[in-house]
Image (cartoon, rainbow, N blue to C red; front, side, top):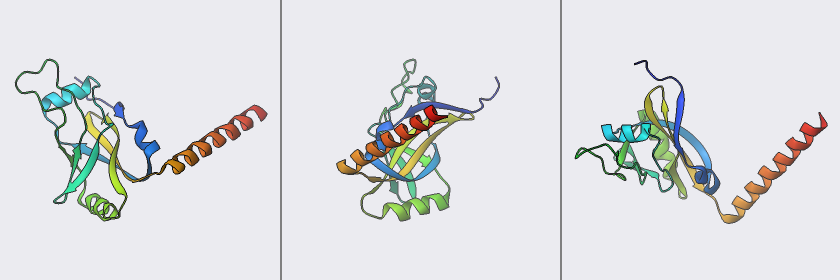
Length: 154
């Protein structure tokens, strides 16, 4: 069977971009069991309650729900277990330095297959207040209106 090419999206966390202002984005591999990979290949995952933590120089993905594989047996995985993320040492150091600040957290943005390997996109993010969210929405709508006006003009 030929190896997969390209990027196949499994799940994305659209609410994270609304609730947080994204500062840095990192791509990380995940340590998974066999039934987790099969469940992900079926396109089943949820990032809504997910977050990442730094423990003893390692980054762990927590709260992400990968449902049990329907055809799995006693070897099935726990749906909300902590999963280790695979990052370079200097990336872990940069993340650790940024998350020491107050109000900064690690949030998963998307989960996908990149050339056959399961990856997660995590972001160093700062929480937004409600007035920041309204301001971001107003900016997005004004930009959309100007683009639309320029498109009609040309």
